Image (cartoon, rainbow, N blue to C red):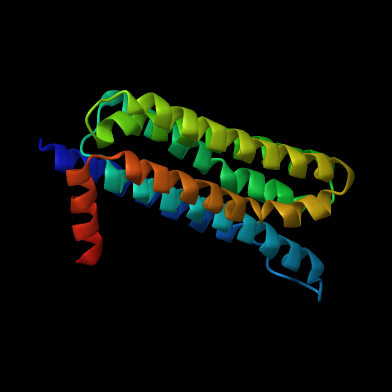
Length: 210
């Protein structure tokens, strides 16, 4: 099997799993009855948080697969672990919908976000050597990504701390995490692009122009 075909199969399978996760999360939104729209609105907010978090990771996943040239068993295993963590989102989303004013669902949701980020970080770090020739710069990229993770984990812990006292406020703050993650990863993507070989960077620019 060609390396390109193997990578494509992994990417297509991942996209299918992510699409199913979003669909299941949407099906958990309760239909309002007897004019009770408060729970319906809270459920929509909870779904929106899950949706944008999943979309953020899908975008990062897409960018990663644009960079790598091949895959190996370690990379496939890390990708499977990442997908497993995403599959848990509908479960925790439903729990948060049913108990938006409780502490435990909010804290559990924060723990899940840290678990998802940890699995994706493992996937990203496993993909760094597959994106270019092995150099001493790999260690620099890993350290840079780990520093970015520390800031993201700190943001999650901060929201969880607020959620311990005001669960409903934490629910709203969770929707800001994809925004924080976007700006942190945008900075890393720039560094990642700078560290790639010149020839590889030219090829990427040509692909974007097409």
